[in-house]
Image (tube, rainbow, N blue to C red; front, side):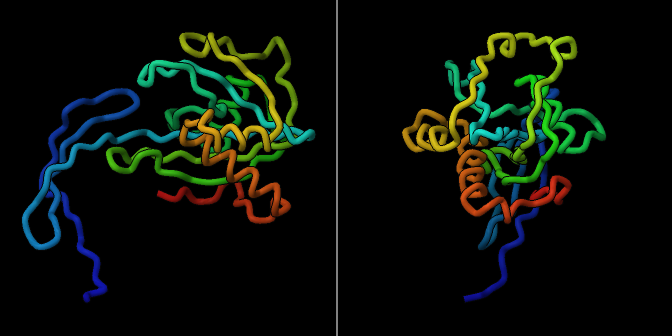
Length: 201
């Protein structure tokens, strides 16, 4: 058996939709053994998410309406990589402030994930934020649209993990981030990557 991997080359590309957050394209790709196949994919700007862990061992969860699934989901503070030139740790802190009214003095990388690689190149970097403090009331972000309906709670990290395992938390970055945070805590936070570590694209 050959150890050489097939090189999947794009022969043609047709753009179906162009939007602010994602584009939809169809690509003709070379397949092993000859021939080509058509693949529809969503090219996404990417996102950041934050497990905010306080000194009492509690994490911040938000409950937000997600129209594609038609219901509210428990999630982490999160947002798009859509500000040109913005460093990822800065984006994470911005989202933490906007969605949870918190700042953090310490930020590390927990995990990177491809949210659904069967159809999108979206990558999410999940950070661990510690040494939390409240954003002063007069500096807080004014929330609009679905964010105006956000519910923000703090629960014990182990309770959040139990919610993941019970199927009560299904958002991919929340599942990955909470499980990674529990592992990081249990190993003394010794295996975290620096906040500026290269993104695993």
